[in-house]
Length: 431
Image (cartoon, rainbow, N blue to C red; front, side):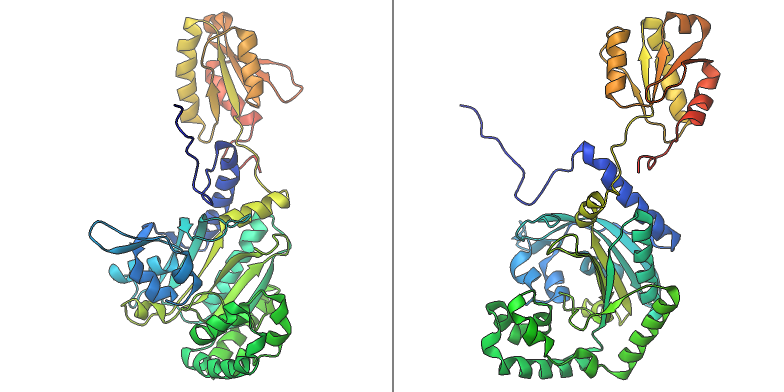
């Protein structure tokens, strides 16, 4: 009996070779920007103790209650696949003693896991770039993060992404505001949907972020968090806005922006677009000054953001800014045993001399006609040809496959310089 076909898990996708250019183009672009601002990479485990996320994200958040992939290992410990990166990054900094009286500017990239309903740009295994800064408490670092994300969009060529800002204030200010909000919502209890009624006693600020259009008028009349901010948070937010104004960064203050995780305080921000439907947030973050202490370290100012790579790739594709496939620069055609000996030596020499060169060497034999057909199919720009005549003369013929130019014959020593002068080399020349 034929074995049943095994397919990937729902919401977890293969990233196929033809898609790699787009992924690598996006990743290399944002990493280049990060390095330009002095941020360093950290690599974190995919699996953490479940207690880390319960303590950091909050027991009553949707992530911990409904979405985490949690299991007991053979020792009976409760472990979870990471649903986000900040908690693990904070745990690492505390564990290795890297935050107290120190400044750390870090980034990480990789898969995260949430058991959500899969949608376009939103999957159960998804990839995030996360950025975290520890040890800086002023609005200037908040501004740097926003300016840096604005540079992402500029460098990638993305348009129609707007910035929304808010301040959540201190924990004491939020506690006072929470009482006012709960009192208001309880007076309109019959207008709340089921999800909001559940959150009313657990996490009422999350109700402000409801996407239910039937509650829009109710929430528009709710007390404003801005009216309950402490003086320090108000000044911090005003100073941030002043920096952004001077830098020419447009933004909209959104009083309903509260973010979905319990650990945020003071500045929160989102970059959103109307071109992705319901999944319009492409980058989001904010301050979490209490989280380091909450996870067992000493009180440390901190701020971070994350952006979903799948959503950005969808947006890049829709705006036709996505990199095309990484096509080869050259295809090496060899006819005869002596030509193959010369060709294999040449191919490795060219790779030594020309970093970034994408060179395909023909495999599988066949005559010139077959090899040229494969060279054309590869979409290479040049065909490097070695036959009997080329071997005897220690030369290589170069045929232009995508341009109307006459074929060249050059010495072995001149091949690398000829390629360098005729085609742009490097990973991102396909954008």
